Image (cartoon, rainbow, N blue to C red; front, top):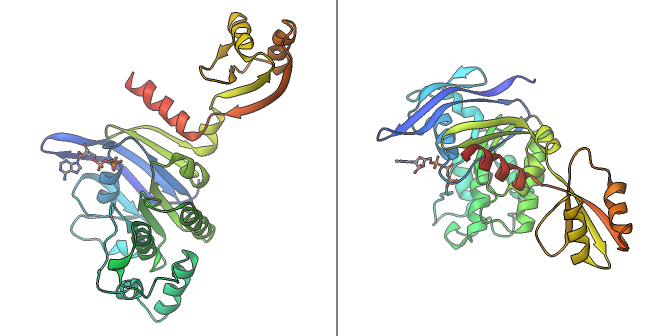
Length: 299
Ligand SMILES: Nc1ncnc2c1ncn2[C@@H]1O[C@H](COP(=O)(O)OP(=O)(O)OP(=O)(O)O)[C@@H](O)[C@H]1O
């Protein structure tokens, strides 16, 4: 595995004696996008805040090998972050908001790069108080990228973005990843995370229940066959009687166990005089896989 840019070890946090993080340990390897996934209240934002020194928690956090201390964090100069709701100065333009936080001689050039990558040019010189939710979100994301961070921490970055804005942000994140930037991203939009993350950390009630790569997790997903016939109702009954697991719903969708052969499924139907007009494979996505994982854990 590549060197870890972020290492979190045995992180524990309680609010009023109620544990919200329980022995959380994980790593973000350099150049990887790590997705932090879990239900509302699972502890994702708390982990991010602890990493950024915004709250005090027990445990060991290292960024590029340097220990983060709650009261001393110069190492945060290599980190960019957007946590919870983006805030900006409403009576300043987006550009001036960015200018406030951009360091160095090439500040203007870096602002221009981020503004153009996130397609913000048409409104960047308007006062931020006139921005829509999505525009404010982009401004918050732009701030996170401003000072060439090595590690970027984004809490629900796609919040409020329209499909085009979502794609622009996804493309920008992937471009920065190619340049070696490491990401820790939480998102409830699992279809989006599926397009981005290399690794996943799944958290439930403050405890990590799974650490895996996206490839490994998706390899364990369920496979289905969607069959179109001339008598769908009858086809479902025949397949169920033959021992296949048919998914409830308007279409004929059969769960394919590893040992099941497509030809066998189809021949069951044709041998009963059912004409098959179309067959398609369908794989479960990240969302259903995560939901299944959480259901197993809480069972
Ligand atoms: N300042 C606080 N005081 C008391 N409890 C808190 C505080 N901040 C968070 N919590 C509790 O800690 C738990 C974890 O919250 P956290 O915001 O980390 O969850 P999350 O996974 O980010 O949820 P969401 O997806 O809704 O943003 C929740 O039960 C929450 O109520």
